[in-house]
Length: 146
Image (cartoon, rainbow, N blue to C red; front, top):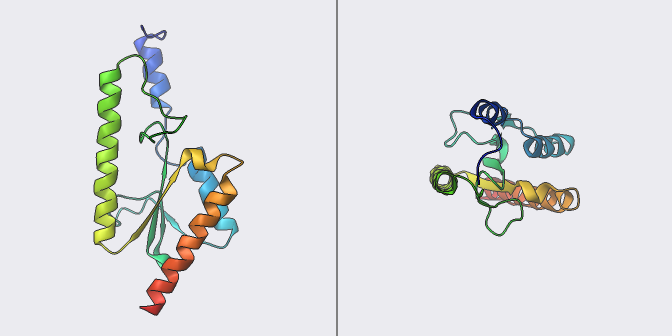
């Protein structure tokens, strides 16, 4: 299937896609802040430069887009019909990089929480964020009780 946009139009559209301060990330940040959790963003000194870092809980949170990180079984992830080899390789590289970053964080003693874009839909966000809150409370107990 041929692309319906010219190369310059496609370039412009792709250049508008951002990696920081995405809508899903903003939802998570707003929820955390409104519930009293204080955090830092994209901390370079933490392996993998996570989206959200809660040092008090020694926790890194990644807010992953289902398409860009290849969320298996999700309706938001499907391989595009054009240039499929490129997209399959790109998503695979993203997955491999994610796994390396998560391992580096675990090896450094950090807890990793991955939140998928589809888990932040209006009917699921409270459930998802309550699970995150539960993980954070467990992590805090482990830090102070060990």
